[in-house]
Length: 136
Image (tube, rainbow, N blue to C red; front, side, top):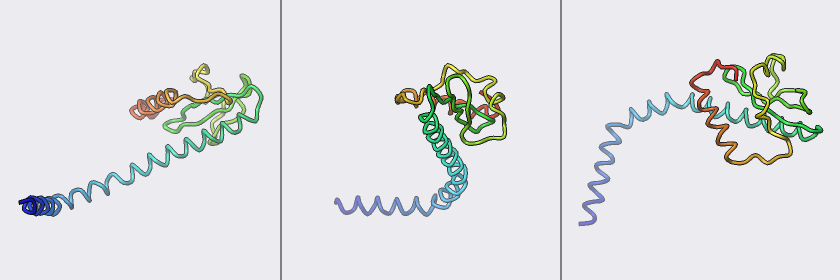
């Protein structure tokens, strides 16, 4: 009896695979490029954050701040209250990037970032996806 159940399950799986397999294949092909783009954007933002943090650790009284230019995130490095540079490099001047930025959200270079802070940042990024042209 147990063998009949396994055979019936296998037959059903094959029938569903034949019926819906091409549709699933087409759906995965359509989703592949947007997923690759989102992953590469997240990886480039993380790489820029690490570069900015490494640069900030070499400065006295340093901090970093995440700002947005369109839908791309940039990390501004501060020494005291003066902006030093931005990662990844952009053609926009630092003063323009920081116009509407909340400078109280700066991350000190020698502080550990808590998981809750990372979660808040991820939630903010998720909300920004609906408004890609918002500056900050």
